[in-house]
Image 1 (tube, helix red, strand yellow):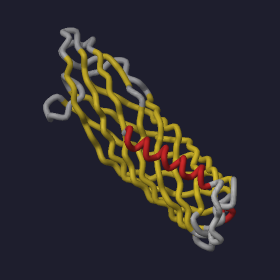
Image 2: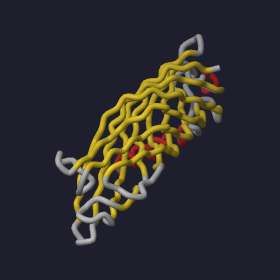
Image 3: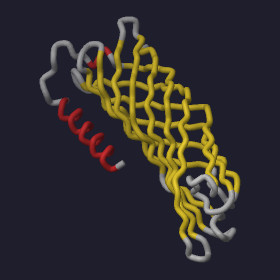
Length: 225
């Protein structure tokens, strides 16, 4: 995770530095400027690292995973800053849900006793998107934002959280066509802050903590207005 963040921060620095460089005649930020909307399809790999600390000072740790395909809607606005640099702002919403089950008997438990089921839905994010236009039809960008999702956790837990949030890091490219349509590809990770609850372990008042993360790859088809 730290290595990916360093790569993305380095990409941001290169993009910002490019603002002061000479611009190829084929590049044009105005071609990508303005509002846009897109339909996105993505494959998401959810990983949940967690542990239970019970009243006997026993710590049980484990990892559970889930791969899910979802469809979402992205909308945003790209503002030209120089001949080849834009700063985009936007939001992404995934109305679907994905369920992750972990139990003590399958070797991937993050609860030390009983079954735990976690459903993630109403996933949304807001972001900024520094973008470099490399030609009149192609651009590359990095994406940094805030992510939030609703949680429904059932099973061997008490007082589960109703939501989780964290940071989004992504990198991608956009190909623009003469009619205003575009295709966008992106890869990245959503890194959520730790969630905690009670239950699990060998006692009902054990403390359970988990750190979710989602790695994703997506393809979007949209239109610039």
